[in-house]
Length: 194
Image 1 (cartoon, rainbow, N blue to C red):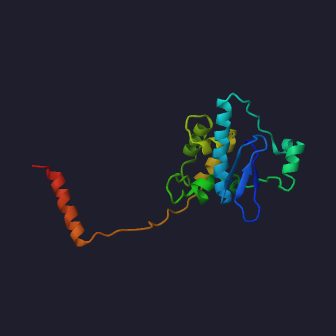
Image 2: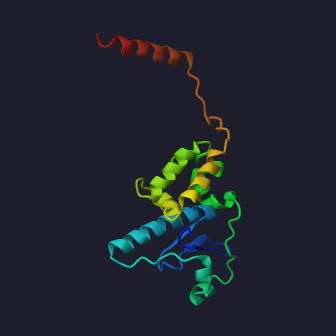
Image 3: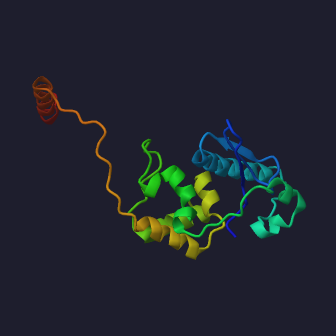
């Protein structure tokens, strides 16, 4: 079992909304599906942490089939299709919403590039998030209920992605005056103050 089932809601002209049937009161949203998934992971992690701090009982995650037998869930999810994750590309979609398509990293540079990294390295990082040795709410949520075999599959998938690095967005060439000033300052730095 991977964790809590999330329901994604989208009406015309609205953002994506996310709720967790087993964790009442835990809701999130995002302007894009990917943003909603990232926000939902963070919201769930924070909500569960507050429940633990308050001494509330943490509900055990149930499978989709178990939830479908629950009348309240069945009513809420009547028009939701059953999740089918039949390819690794579908399974790693939550990863790519932060790490970028094919694990290239994002333009912001905050989330690291994972494409082409050694699978053993990636596996160890995933295990460290799962086992609490590394801390980042979205990664903890994604990894916390995964088996070693599943984490190895994810690591192997991203390790096999050999995508080129993007070209630099902006290059800067010094003018002759700037180059002369730069060279003079380097000489001063090497010679010291006196």
